[in-house]
Length: 238
Length: 161
Image: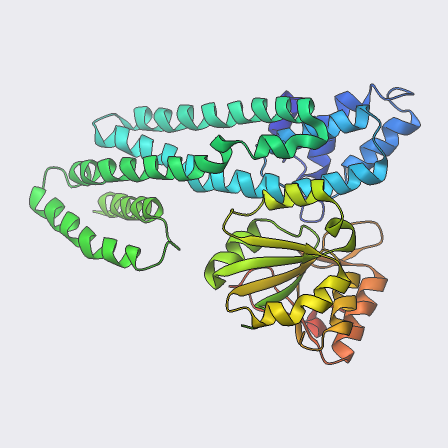
């Protein structure tokens, strides 16, 4: 099942989102239902799990584990359907905050920092790819394990302090990485033209003020990543 | 302060609601109106995990929502009323005259449901309920995110010929 969670978005569509992918990931467990593969229980469960479902793709592993557990415990189908529906919001929201809004930009900034420190393009890309994938592969394994272990009680796993506080902590780390990467990458992009680099950094002061006035709607790391991307484009065009 | 949105969304509490609407509108509370959910602590626990701790969440029945709506509207903070289906919102709107606009934010595919928009799939019963709401003077629109244009029911609600 764990390997199948990597292709959970393989049959994505607007109408059922990752529902078919979720069913595909759970399918090995459903073969253990009374009647075996092709039996009535197997068919009914597979049809139920193929319906609309949407959440963060990495956290879908937790849904796979919990729903497989409920199916094999032969929980009432109405309860499974309600549980399945209730999982979408938290697994999407927790995943969005932890991965898309925190882990992904932090890893991207780490890659940029490596480049700013003198690494080649391959080194910077490797720093990003390796750090990012360590996180998401571990998340899938943890999610599947916790989902299977806790079944309907997965809420207690999702309420873990590291998940609750993780986005804020990673966000602070990302802000530090952005602060380190900004001057280093700027200096390297401007090829030692420290006057121009100084001008850019001075311009960052009013930009920082503007960001602080946005009331948190644009995170600092996101703005820094945007500035770095803009500078990269300028350097490529120059 | 008037309720910022009366939203129908079968996912109830999720990123679009919490981040997409919640942050720009500075939403302080979500009132989730659902008879079954109001009596299901384990489901409430799950939905609470979908929102940051500072966002207050209330899980109420239609009866309780109708009784408490005045207090919600009088609250100085911004709130959103959520239902998972058209039928629940229609029942609430029939008892709360102050509901002048209903926003369909997400009704996804299911048996008997036809696609009207990428995020709106309706069966005949739900289409009729929305028409009935509009006939009573409620402004029924589809809008998934604040930046999107609110699409009037006339543009997507009717069954294709």
